[in-house]
Image 1 (cartoon, rainbow, N blue to C red):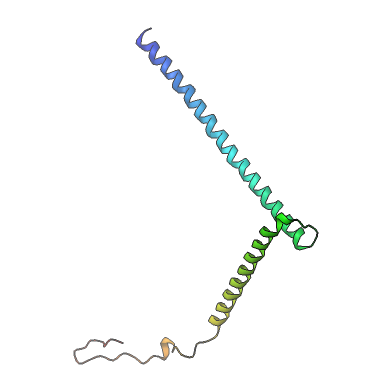
Image 2: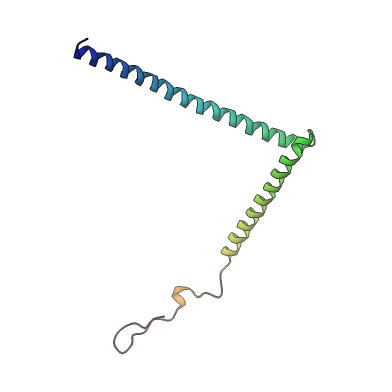
Length: 118
């Protein structure tokens, strides 16, 4: 087998490897998409199950701990939302302690012409 035949054979092998690598990458991308579909379906099932338990339509010992965790988390969310609302409400009130910049006395120059520190 001549040199060019070996080069041609090696180029064919490389092309085959590249084709396989492309197919693997495409299959892996599709797999990630399918895994995302599974996770979305699980979340939807969990949401429906939680609503059924909360509505008294579904009861099972295996659901008690996860439902309790969700309720606790929802309570923490509600507390944080209330805290944010309170902070925003407090910020809307005018503060009497801090004078506005226009109300501050003007700076005066010292003997050497420099403005004294505040």
